[in-house]
Length: 495
Image 1 (tube, rainbow, N blue to C red):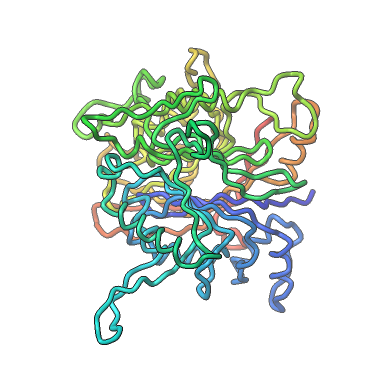
Image 2: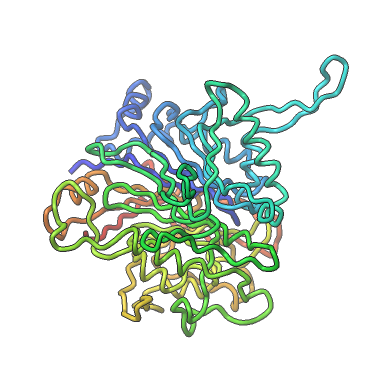
């Protein structure tokens, strides 16, 4: 059976940082690009077209229907990220205005916004009318930017780059009347500001449609607080003497494509200990630098996800709709805060029940020894075969594959395990793609049993450590033949 995948979710390797790139790809245009090359031969299976194009240097610019870019890694990665955006066809060096592209800022820490600042543009001193003037040189102007609403007290605690980032977004807003960047400030809870009470509807980002015109959308489920759709209230992070922990302000998103869901929540934290269902070797230890100063925002977020995404009742197994066997489910999740022990509680895993997990971790700029072994234990079925749900019930560990960008090893076994479990793979850049035909099958089904199929492969990009103290974990086995650098790997779960 022929397979295709229009939706791509990339975890770009920016070492100890985050950069997620979500693309809705027009595969018909990819086909045209390949067929236009005399030295290229179109693969028989559409799911192989994009990897083939990249492998053979076929330009993918013009094949992107919609793209959402979340965070950007630290400042030092800006130039490399630009090249990768070119490689995937999101930007083109001859342009600055990209109406198909939106950018979302999860929170204002350097390892999430540093590169964004330089990718929007930079200031250069030029001599104009015999006077030195700072001139703004634009690189990327997206259609829209989504970020936490301006809060002088909170922003003052954030990265020093925050003011500069807002200034460069403003430059894009005034650059052209017809081609201006829209500033979409998100109200606490991930809500739109359009209604009188300023707290009613979660922000939705339209990512177009996939197979059979099934909508692809990104829904915000947290932003400086979590909105519960049942109680209609916003649970805000705790202020400590007028200050907020910036991680607690993280925007959380759910990407929906039929019955496929992807979850990411920046650096949002949980309990880390028994309050989050973490016991024994799963619990965050005590000690200097190991105790979390964050608030537990995962608990209200779990409750909101369970309320917003209910289980499909037996009478709901009808054609033309998404279907789920548990409430709060997500097919794929990005581990929060790079694998910090205070994030991704057992209760959260039991709620999401992910099939595939991705982790952005590394050694720059400040090494945190992520992912912590407690988080490794929580997802390793050999260590934790069942998860304790918030209601006390036991939920089977659902994780079938864990993919990491670039975690380093360090001679401190209290922080980092010597070896990772068998189903954990270090692959550099990570590409996750739900198979269109499986999305269609579940959408059309009238009974339980159809499966969502997910393909994962690695691009293999790693950074060279700047210090001899760190060594990078070896990559999963690279391919010597074919168009996939690492993989592909296949996973499926039943709906």
